[in-house]
Length: 173
Image (cartoon, rainbow, N blue to C red; front, side):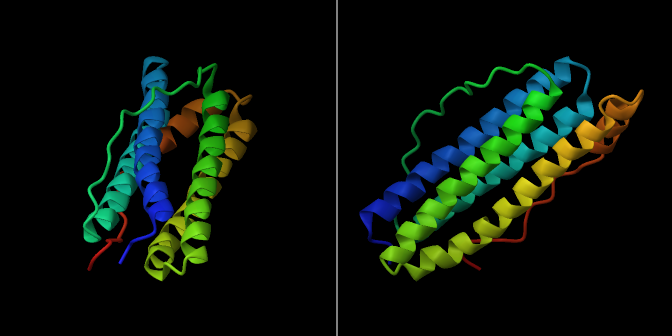
């Protein structure tokens, strides 16, 4: 049973952090759409769906333990978009921040021998590695192609083909 108040508080905060992430990525998509980059916008709309899914998984985990989830207001993103590169770099920076949050919950759960929570978080630890790798690959590809004539257009076309696939993970099978 999930009883440690500090772990519960961190899990509650993570719900909000995941929904904030979705909001941040929607703000990126908003700017990209207006700038005529529907593929890049599509990428971040899908990222937003993933983050919402993650938030719901944390909610499901708390619900499975009979805990009512507190849903405070989601802060407006304070990032000011300058260009595509700034979005890509902020995306990576944000994923690294989320990774640190998840690692902190894991550390606290492990310290109190909350093995159910650490087991659940194992999926998120792996997921965050994937998120950081994808974000870095986007930056690397953008830096390689940004000065070529059609590079951004080609990248935008590739990102337009990305589709949402719900991960195969549930809190309770």
